[in-house]
Structure formats: structure tokens, C-alpha cells
Image (cartoon, rainbow, N blue to C red):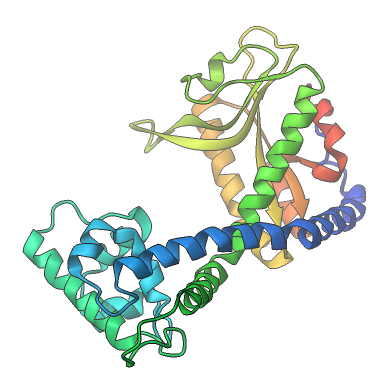
Length: 320
């Protein structure tokens, strides 16, 4: 039976309450989440400064051993360099830079001499464009003080965190949402399956749940199989025979614009699951934040139901 998708008369009131709940959380906890990430990022930047003699001697060997420092180096220039701009200025391969940025490693098959030449080009661009207003010791004889180094690291960390502010907040909110589900389930006698035990979603004991579980689906007409992660997988206490667990995706949003851009993702995941396992799959959303009637209507039309976090007890209406 539908829980919320068939009750449009309630949507506007729920939207208001959900927005209020998200804003309240954001004001209380988002600054803390951002600050804690910035503190760790500052430490990482300071480590990069030590490796590079405080941006005065960026050796290809350091980039080879520590490809993960490239984002810090990009944010150390004036102006900060986007990935594509660095590729163009240094005349290096897109594959090299994107491997360093995304995978924190170097391309496996590229010749060593060629990689070293490109790393030297990157180092030369960063040294030439290093921001003298941040690294105030550049061009002077006296070495930087610890205060100057920490101040510079904080500024670069702010640049790095500012570039990924939304993901930082979204990840913190998702952790909180899953914690709310865990608490609700625990109060009703559910047990969380330990991660790493290889439990399959279709072999979960009754009264258990798991977070970020991989579920295999078939692509290309059933020829190829891939795993897709599901945020919360719950096997009801009262399970009959070979019932599938109930799936929930934790979704939060701090504005209405991005939700409408993302709404097709859930529909695609629902279609993949049902094409693999049939119509008995129950795929739903756990929502908090800015989800307007356009978003809700789209998901309802796709047969996707949801639970609002401010009405978390609606989980029981899914047979949980």
C-alpha cells in the first residue's frame, strides 16, 4: 500500500516542515561539520608544504610518491587553477591529471620518463604561479615562520573546502539520516549486520538491516552485472518466505534547484532494480530538506514512495 506518494494533499505541509527541519540542522551542525573537515584539510596542506619546501621546490619525485597533493597545489596558485586550466597550461595529458585528482594515483601503463616529464611541467607551473599573498616568504631570504606556514595552510584549506562545501554538508547530513534510521530500528529490536561479512541482500535474516549495501543488477540485456549501493536495506521482522528487504535511499537537499536535477537518478535506479528482480522490489526514499511538489510528483509517477524524516514513524507503514 502506498504511504506518501498517493497523498498530494499532504505534500505542501510536509515540504514546509522538512525545510524547517533541514534549516534547523544546518544552522546547528553544518558549521561544525565544515570546521572539522577544514581542520583535517589544514593538516594535509601543511604536510604538502613540508614535502615541497613550502612551495619553493616541487620535485616530480614528490608528485610521483604523493599524487594526492595535486588539488592542494592547484589551490596554491594565483588564481587557483581548475583541473582543465592546469592541463592546458602545463601541456599534460588529461588522463594523468584526472587519475591524480580522482584516484590519487598515477596512470599504470604510461612510460616512467613521460610521466616524470609531465610532472615536472606541473611543478613548474605551480612554482611560477604560487600565490605570494598566501606564501609571503616567496622571494625573500628569511625562511617562513611556523605562524606563516599555518596561516597559509589555513587559507589553502579554505579554498579546498570551499570547492567541495556542498558534498561536505551532504555527507554529514547523510550520516545523520542513517543514524536516525539506525536508532529507530534499534528501538524496535532490529540488529545491524556487521559490514564486511559478505551478506547478500536477498539472504538477510528477518529483523536485520545494513547500510550502503551493494546490490547486483543486470545491464545490457542481462549480459553484464554490476553492483549498485543502497543506503539502507531492511529485512522486516515479519518476513514471509522469500520476501525481498525494503530499500531506502537517504536524500537531503539545501535548495530546490538541485533536487530537480537529481530526481532522475532515483528513477533510473528503480528501473534497474525492477528489471533485474521484478515488481516485488520496494525502493523508497528517506527525505529531509528542499523537495518540492515537482520532485515529489515525478517520483510518485515512477512508483517511488518516501518517508519524511520529520515523520520517521512512517517507516512502520512499510511493514518494518
